[in-house]
Image 1 (cartoon, rainbow, N blue to C red):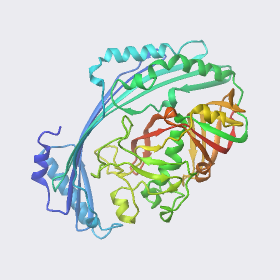
Image 2 (cartoon, one colour):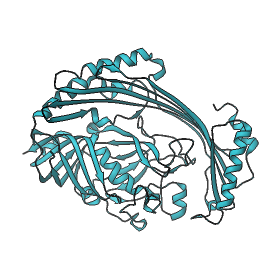
Image 3 (cartoon, rainbow, N blue to C red):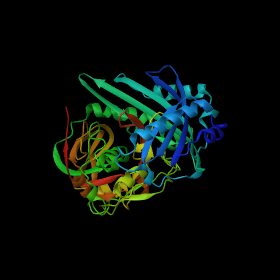
Image 4 (cartoon, one colour):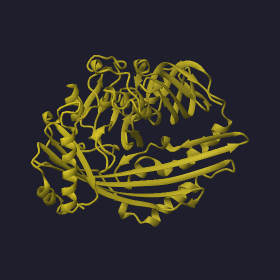
Length: 477
């Protein structure tokens, strides 16, 4: 795709303050087996470019799948026309932004290429693992799937910037549902959040290849379990629930365009205000949140964002104090608020906007056993299955697949339908222990929605387990 593209871009580059080309080619393959039956193999490929032009303070962009010189020229002309139309009508003077002109390369770490493995072997693996879920007549549904994506991008600017990135992602999923009478329960392996960069090796590294027997055993145990009690108690969250807590109650409210009100018509606003940056106590002293697109294997790692800003590890919250927002070069220029390299688009047809990438809770010093031992009365929850949060990302409610009571420092009764609720800053200020490196897992989500028109983004969350005090817990029917 990229052969000769740089030279064609040079031919059509206008005499403007800034012009960039962002080219993307993406290939997807999905293999899935449900109830031991192979579903149709899904493969699709997409490619195109986005041209961005800044001229006279205005800002314009245009996308095209025509990569010929005439096609690029038409896109440049359209983007330039929009830049002229928006001159003097934008929230800022785009000519005053220090647009980056970077050079660099990034590639996902891959030990075993997806393409090296025959399709027949991938199908056989899904069938084998699916069959291992059907251990009892009460198993009503069971499915296994593998979703692989390869994205290759090229970013060019009018002043010699050139960044090439090649990202390989694998998203394996496993789900089993058991039913008895009017009761049904579902278990998904790690909440369906094994989203990582890399190749076929992820299946073994994540524990996916040995998960089926335990998952089937757990879903059957849930059928006979009592409902979760309703009380205020300590709450210990596993990484496959905590990742979504971070995502919803930290990530989204700290996206700077949301703080500025840009998302209010669609996805809502934020309880955080611009003046809170640098002063707000978001959580206890144990709360350390980093934006880190350099984590090995994490789902949203990259070298530069989609506006060319270099990706660097930054503390967003340090010892409980909010230090910076998730704002890209445009939002930073609008506000003067420190941000990060998080300008991201879900494809070549969409303009980049402020998005979280890898947003991580840094490990603490407690083992899982030590956190359990520190609880007199509480509950351990694993694997998210539902979530709800208000439009300012403040009041929330989450449900999990698996709950286990903690009494006098010991895991005791298994309970089903466990839920908890709270208010974001209050909840994080009740953070009382953070798990050490032995409790950390690499989690992610392939389907974070935001923007108008909607953009579906891949995000990562590397997190340990963590213990919270005084949380309202309740059961479900």
